[in-house]
Structures are given as structure tokens and as C-alpha cells.
Length: 236
Image (cartoon, rainbow, N blue to C red):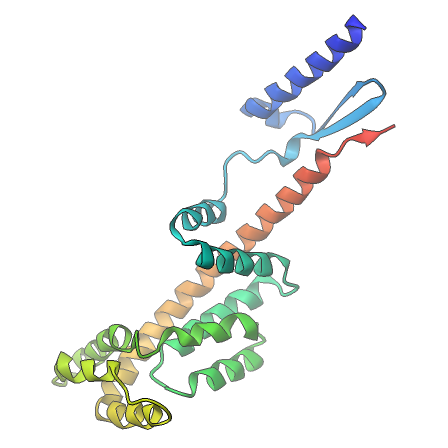
């Protein structure tokens, strides 16, 4: 009886030491402790030295986001980690969604992102919602700096901010689309130039950041699955 208790206590202390000691990571990848005919397998190779960048970002967003947005964020993360598409296709879909969403093509952004995703083999579902970045609430904050950049590069005199502020209050119903098109024709050349440059830069940065994030989330998910399977006791 005393020997059985000693074996149980020594096994528990040994596992605790291996989990807390960084040098234990160089030990063999598996440790088996038997007590009362029960064998437990501890996989030492699945103990992460430090959380990855994607895990740190997820924990940071978890503290900041309110509960409804956090649920959507968790659902998106779960979908990304479980999707059958490779990370490249998902990241390319995000990049195309950002690119099309930052172009002043009101009413055509959805069609454009679907066409580009089909041509380039990107994920359509993840890029489509990003085209809704530009809406009446975000129209002026996004496109006014783009217009200023384009006017500076072209050497033209820009219109004042009051002209842009009226775009934040379009007419209701179907008249809003024609209102945007008629208004943007007055500043089309500088706006297109500045928006294209900004959209390209954001899309390139979004591709590489999302690619690293998706790969990190999938690695973290694989580690969690391996860790949960390693903690399951083997009866025999």
C-alpha cells in the first residue's frame, strides 16, 4: 500500500517537474507512469515554450471586444481553423476583399471581388464581407485621405472637406447609388489613383498578416488536439 502511494506521488511530482522545467523539453517525447494497472502517457513534445503571436492577439481581442462581437470573432476563428482551404487561399481571399472594399466602385465591389476570387482561386466567402468596409458611415474617413493623396500626386487643387461631408448623408432608397456616382465623377481621377495605391498597400499587408495568423491559429489548434489526446488515460 505504501509503495503504491509512493509510486503515485512520485509520478505526479515527476510530471509536474517536467511541465515547469524548460530543460525537460529536451527529454524523451513520452513518459509512462503506471499505478494500479493504469498507464498514463505524457507527451513532452507538445508542451509549448511560449504562446504564439496569433494566440496573444486572440487573447488581446478577447479582452477588448464586447460579447456579441466576441462570439462572431470566435466563430470566424473556428471557421478559419476548420476550413478545408489551405491558408494561401484564405489569405488571398482576405486580400482581395480588402482591395475591392477600398476602391470607390459603389455597387460593383461585390461583383469585382467574386470575379477576382474566381480568377485567382481565392476563397470567396471570407473576402466578400470585407467589401462592406465602405458604407455611408465610413465613406468620408476612408476616401477623403485617398483623394488627398491622389490630388497631391497629380498636382491638382483638392476640393474642401465640406464637399465630402455631404456624402455621409445620401438620399434614402435607390437614389443613393446614383447620388454617389454623380458626386464621385467630379473627383474621379484623384480618388481612383489614391484609392488604388492605398488598396494595393493594404491588400499586400493584409495577405501576409492573415497568412501568418491563419497558420498560427491552425498550429495552435493542432497543439490543443495533440495535448488533449495525450492527457487521456490508457486503461490496461
